Image (cartoon, rainbow, N blue to C red; front, side, top):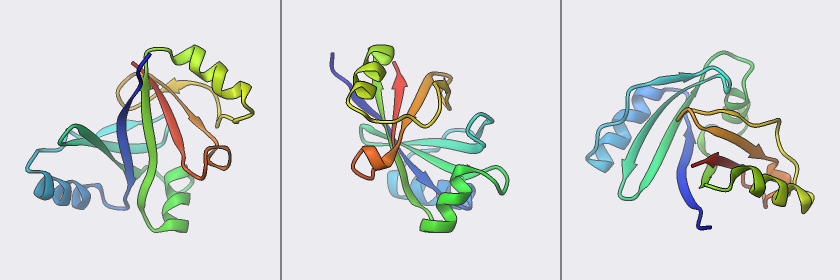
Length: 131
């Protein structure tokens, strides 16, 4: 089983400004803005080389992204790893003592996702996405 980076997520207070900047530096067009109600964000993806970047803008004042923006001011929010072994890998990771942040849900690409607690993953918020 070989997993891959699905995307690197960047939190921003202004999705349109972020889209314009990343379109300029990549030479590519960002995807249409998509609301992910389960995560309380608007999101857009843009490909730079072989890597996808997910731009995140909070929907509302009481969201994980709003909290992140108030603490960090924006920037890299999480790294998403895609796997074809989703359920088994969750079990394996949890067996090492790593905590999840909730249960699997449907993410921005209409795939099942789950997040792992950054205190257990070397201060990096990791999202696992089903291939």
